[in-house]
Length: 77
Image (tube, rainbow, N blue to C red):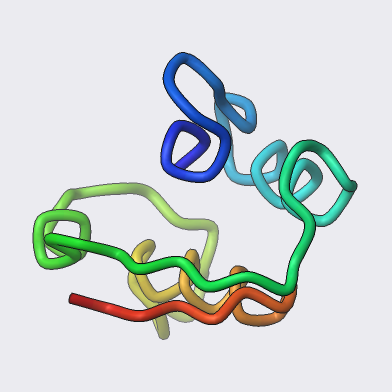
């Protein structure tokens, strides 16, 4: 995600909380903007651990929801 938003070799950290902090902390990208997520089905199917004890959302859904809460328009393709 960091490379998609910031460019080659860039990142938002190594785990979920770092991603949330960097996305909302003014590091590199500043919402509002639109993210066109190409080949999103690959990401949707990728296994990942999410700290969601109720099992309501997939990791992919959590990422999209976080982006949208931060003011990013996400276009799924």
